[in-house]
Length: 290
Length: 303
Image 1 (spheres, rainbow over the protein chains, first blue to last red):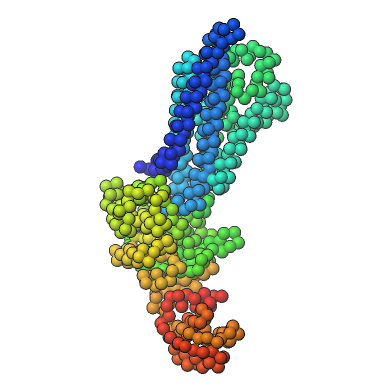
Image 2 (cartoon, rainbow over the protein chains, first blue to last red):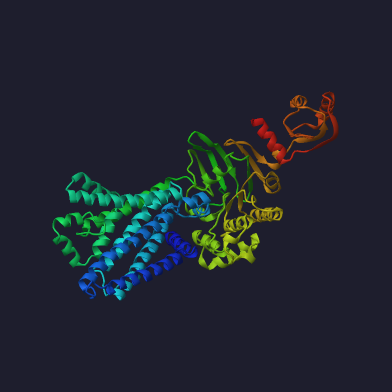
């Protein structure tokens, strides 16, 4: 097996043997169970006249609630990616674990790409697996299925990949805790900057709008989150918000609503961003003296 | 590359970390099949030298070749084994899996893995723990595992950086036997250690390094040609002891004074001087210099 795949396999194997996968699976099943029960309750809510909510309203409430639940999943994924990637290289350098392996005929680029690949597999599996379980539970509970489930998985996974790439590049120079914390804070700041940008759009203030645009370019996690939100919104909901007119403007400052999906050029930017950060990681690790 | 090339050859190899000189112009040659001891106090530059040779650090200046190829050559690493000073292995793997991982990275043909792993585990005495998680191993057992990893694939050159630091006396004895076995089959061994008796027992040649410079090198016979004299004495205060400086480097251990390089002809003069200074002598024991005597003498001269 080529060294890249050996390091990828090791990364997956470590997550499995250290019971990280098991912990995530159990927690996800718990969340799916509780949220499924909660979604089911929406269908049993009665109005003052004793009648149940009409299907359109159930769909609207379910889709809104599902966006909030998905935000939690994307947060767990981002948090896990940052916490796992932060010490991925630094802790193995500090402990000496990498010493005997790097003395083998192995390129440092192979170590970096292998570890990234292993974590990317985990992130993608988690994004796809948790989305499948949650959407199935929601569908069983309410009969609702969001319009673009595949895109949802891709956007959430890409958010995780972005953050794991950031954690990994920091891991080549900083200690695990420092790198993990920086990645997490950056993720939160990007999210807040996105909200600021939306407020700027609502107020038609160019400077505030620029904050959102620049943050979406520098760290595309929030931009990708908007893509995930868009793929969860039924067409009726977008129409409703747009029809709200001036109220629609204030809705644009809502981080749980997105009127337009990210353009294809932005997706290209994200791919380029990940490739550049990965190249930086390789460069930084090759320059590091161990 | 022909096996006639030396196992290690360095010319003026230097390394600086900022303003700190970790290694200052290391020039040496280690022939094939030789057990070469690299001695020095902590921080002398021993581990830096090994890491430079293995390509884990980049030299500031100078050149070096391993098995006839420039350092950093990936293919050469197939023929090299390495036990780091800071040894740690994946605690979530068992010993057999760690060795299989190293077989894979080496890379060795898969058909040979089973025999290689069994032989390496037998050699280091870990066969009965082969299927146990490394996280359950003591430090000594982890060091044995590291040694087993370094032996995989019958390397032509093995770097052992403080290979017995976590081992008990039996383990140290075993490692000496393993090192002798490696040399007998033609493998060159670069032994980094500050355990002088260990080096003295197994090495064909040694180099002593201090503050990044080699201050002496040669075969054991060349290095240990002098005589040391150990004296058991009382009644000498600090000032009186200072007056014995003319008898060469002195290792002062309270009641025992060891003159680490003193011609046997000067012993009567030493005895009369100590008596004249008010000392009471209980024992005078001349002996061949040990590596420790020589090491202390060299460091004394350096200081």
